[in-house]
Every structure is written in structure tokens, then in C-alpha cells.
Image (cartoon, rainbow, N blue to C red; front, side, top):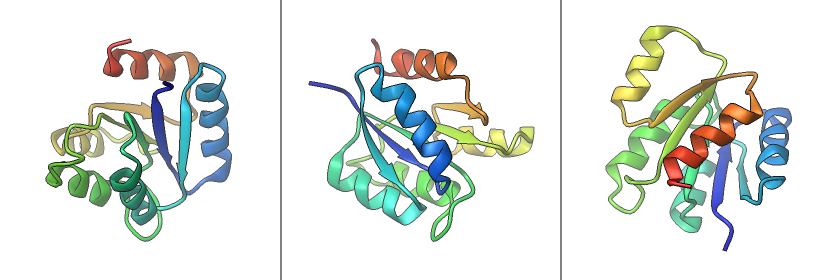
Amino acid sequence: MARRILIADDSTVFRELEAKTLSARGYEVIHAANGAEALRLTVAERPDLILLDVQMPVMDGVQVLAALKKNEATAKIPVIVVTTIGREKDRDILLRGGADGFLSKPIDGRLLVERIRALLGE
């Protein structure tokens, strides 16, 4: 059974680029266009890993991460924050908030897959 990855990003372009990279390597991809949708789909679909943008409508990535880590059913799902925000302070806040990794856009597909495989123990 294919591992499932939720991509939460309000940018259709970034979601499609990441999905293409992951689908080509056998991952099943779930798309969320905003933070609230990401949270709802995580609870409903239980992905194996989440790629989470920070700047999204409805709920931002920081709020989604906090909600995921507070929920016993979703707290252990690995989260890689994927964002254009590169400030060290923001990165530290997200990592202390429970993020398992951090990648800056635009994403290097090879590095993305390496990080995912490491977190999933593949």
C-alpha cells in the first residue's frame, strides 16, 4: 500500500509540483488548499506525513501545526514545513512547535524525497 502524503499549500502551482515529484515515486497525494482543510483532511484521512505551508488562508501553518500536535490522533504524524519564509526565528518557532523538518521554497525534489524517506523510515 502506498504511503500517503498530505500537501497543505494555498498555491496550486507548488501543490502540483510537489505532487508530481511524490506521485512519480509511488506516494499517494492528498491536497489541501488552506489550513482548515489541511486539519480536516488530516483527521479524516490519516496521512503518513504532512507537507505544511506557513502562509495559508483560514488557518496558517503555525495554527495547523499546533492543532495537530494537541490532538492525540494526529500528534505523531511527521510534519515538514515548506515555506518561502527563511527567517531563523520563524524556523525555530516551528521546530519548537513540533515540526519534524523545514524546507524552503522552491523545493529541491531530491532533497524533499530524502527527507520524507528518512522520516518514514524508508
